Every structure is written in C-alpha cells, then in structure tokens.
Image 1 (tube, rainbow, N blue to C red):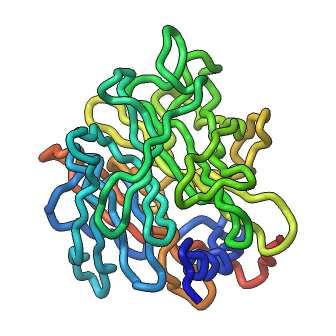
Image 2: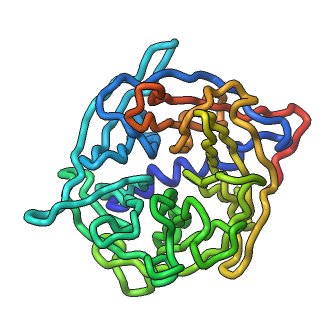
Amino acid sequence: MADPLGLELIGATWALLASVLPCPLDAGWILHQEVQIPKHSGGYSAITYEQSAHRLWLLSDLPDGTLSAWTLPSSGGLPRMLQSLSLKGAAPHRLHLDGEALVLVGDQVWVASEGRRTSERPAQLLRFSRVRGDLMQVVPMPPAWQPNPGQGLDSNAGPESLARLSLPSEPLALLMAAERPLLQGPRDQVPLLRWFWPSGLDPRRDAPQAQSQGALRPPTGEGWGLTDLLVLHPPGPGSPQLLTLWRRYRDPFQWNNQLRLYPLPAPDAVVDALEHWDLQAMGLTPENWEGLSLGPELSPGQPSLLLVSDDNLNPLQTSRLAQLQARHSPTCVLKP
C-alpha cells in the first residue's frame, strides 16, 4: 500500500527513540567521528538522516536554497554528494530563502526560513516539492512572531528549528522554535510554536494553524541561541522530551556549543533543562554547529546523533559533520 506521508520510514525511526539518550543522563556521549564536508555550496544549517535510503539530506541557508543528499562517511572517508535540489519559488516571484530547518514528509519538504524584519525577508514556514524543488505553500508567522514596533522575532533570530511533533499514528504536527526570545517577551524564554491541521484539513494541501507551545530557558550567560531540536517520544505513555542544540559566539572568534534536554512544555509553561552536555568537552571542534538529526545505529537498537556545522562562507570556518553515540551503563534501566 502506498505511504504518501512517509509514515513507514518515520515509524521505524520512532521505534528507536527510547535508547537515544545516555543512561544515566550524566553518562554523556562518545564522539564517534567528525569529518569535514567537501566544498560544494556550504552554509549547511539543517540535517536529516533518511533511514530507508541510508543517506543524509543537508539544507543550505544560502540564497539559492539548495537541498542536497549525501552518503554517510565511513572508515574515515568523507561524505559524497549524491543529489542537489534547488528550492525555488514560482515565476515570476523571487524567493528570498534563508532555510534554517527542514522536515521531510513523504515527497514534500517543510522548511523554516529565517527573517530580517523586512517585507523582502520575512520569517516563514514553507512547503516544497521534494521531487522538483518547487514552492508549494507559504505560511506566515502568527501575529506575536510578526515584526511590529517592539514585537516579534528579532532580525536573524529565527525561526531556527523545525521538527515533527506527532507520532506516525497521529495527525501531522510540527514543532518550531525561535533562536532567541521574542522582542516583547522575557529575555530568558525562547518560544516554541506547534503547527497543526484541524480536523477536515489535508496536511498535503491545506495550510496549518499555529499555537504557542510554551518556552525553553536558555543556558546561563549572554549570546546563546537555539539552532535545532529533536522530539523524543517515550516508548509508552508519557510526554515527549526535546533534545536541543545551542550555540554561542563571542569575539574574538570563540564558539561554544551545548546539547540540552527539556520536557515538552505545556502551551503556557516555561521549562528548565533536565540535563545539558558541553560539546567541546566531548571533543567536537568549536564551530557554528546548527543542525541536529537522528542517525544510523552504531549498536543494535541504539541510533546515533548527527550534527552539521555552517561555515558561513568564512575561510576561517569549515562545514563539518559529527556523529555522537550515547553512553549506556550496563546497570542503567531506561525508564518510559
């Protein structure tokens, strides 16, 4: 039977989520490998691993809006590009794309495009054809995220993250995050949005509606921004958790990076991190790490994590791919 929403692939991924995290949480992660991505376009801001084809999809935030498929590196080798797809608007409208996050749903691609508080560069949720790269739908941000005096997303501050929120057996829902707080909001709250389709609307055709999904407390200190997230569902009853990727830049040319785990907040709640991990303490190169995805299994039943960095087309930076594996103590029991 045809699977137009790609649920068979997604379901196979969800079945493994219970073993993604370290056990216990403070056991941390092992850096399995880190390699440089060969120069093609650069600016990679998002990554997704396609399990059925055993390949990576990388989204560039450069204006040409390139989505490319890659092999996974193995035995110290470099990843190899398999396919490049240009994401484009319908003529004669030029698309000012700043793609920062993506979700693959069957033959369609949802992209979060970052804004600059101008009519020429608005923050948007975009739907593209995964086959041709054509723009299929433009969804504006809700009023609270729109640029008005003293209100909305700050320039170049999101939306930076997008993930599938719903389980395969549930109607499609997406989770979006800003990079930093809204201008009208508290400075220690990074907001989330839930995008959903009310009953009777078709996720393959109709525009979704937005609803607040609470907020996350950022790391302590100035300059931290949320760059990507994963939704982790428990194997049984219970609420999802969010594995998030954070970065901070400070002059002169200093990068800090963290993974942070949060409970999924209620629509009116603000939540603190349950645990956090310093990526440099794991051995990762200090870089502009922007993309986060589940990866292939390195041990039976235990998927890895994949991270990608954005070189900003800066000769002092590189596009890099890293693979992490959670440490599991033999005596630790994973709790639902």
